[in-house]
Image 1 (cartoon, rainbow, N blue to C red):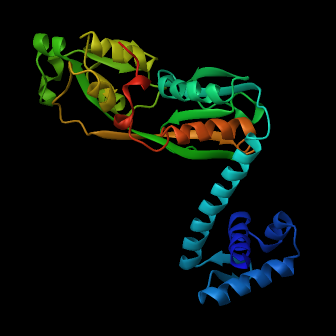
Image 2 (image 1 turned 90 degrees about the horizontal axis):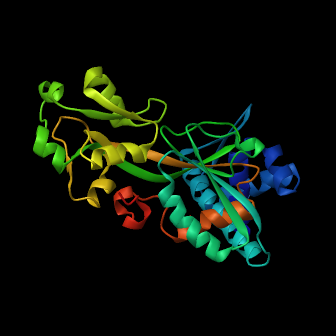
Amino acid sequence: MSLLIEIRTAYFIAKLGTVSAAADALGVHRATVMRRVDLLEAELGRKIFRRHSKGYSLTDFGTSLVRSAEMIENEAARFVGLCKLSNEQLEGELIIATPYGTAPTVVAAVQEFQKRFPNISVRHDAVTKIPRMEIGEAHICFFFGPRPEIADYVVMPWQSHRNKLYAHQSYIDKYGNPSALSDIPNHRFALLSQELFSLPNDWIRENVPAENVVFFSNERQTVWRAVHEGLAIGSTSEHFSHHNPEIQSINLPIPNYKSETWMITHMDTHRSPKVMAFLNCLKDAGFIGKFDTDMDAKVMPQL
């Protein structure tokens, strides 16, 4: 037990940056924190911190130790949260924000969530930018693109998406399947609005003449439908094509893009019972950390 306390102490120093801050968070004297670190280093026979005039910095071994300690701390917090949930009745409203056209996966998790906590209502907002979570515009936000770096926001990986260009078989029967950039002037393209993150759509903007873009939308599902109806070539995920056998991959030399989706909360509400309950539902249902090609068909729109 003592070793776990000492490891947790080292984790708090690394997390908070100073011995004094760690002591305040742990509710002990500064000298106690320093003594625990000395005991831990003696027990392990390895240096965890480098001491210098500005404080403590992690050694390579210390970085590995703190990474493991963070996992232990997070699991412990999750366990405590589950214990609290079992002893209280949750109610009120949970606000979830997602980019346009990406709600189906979340809705599948909401179904399980409300089976467990029927007194909580869920409000979904489709957004084009991350809401101001510090003032309650959302409790949980799912978002595409580079990892957001926003002070006081907790950012976690959610899913990875592989995206390519596709067309319906009826389109290919009429126009053919382009295989070279020189074929582009003979084809029609559907494009997602620029404010919505999508690497394949960026490729279309850079390589396809404006007169060949015949359909625009600020809603992903609408672009998917345009592809499904044979209107044009467009960007969709591999998961969409997997569940729609008439959707064919386009032969143009475009990279097979992989984009990340992030799950975002605010530090003030991240450990709240409602947020923890929903995150646990996502985790238990296997909706966290998978490629969308691994997801069940029920989370995709029926076109």
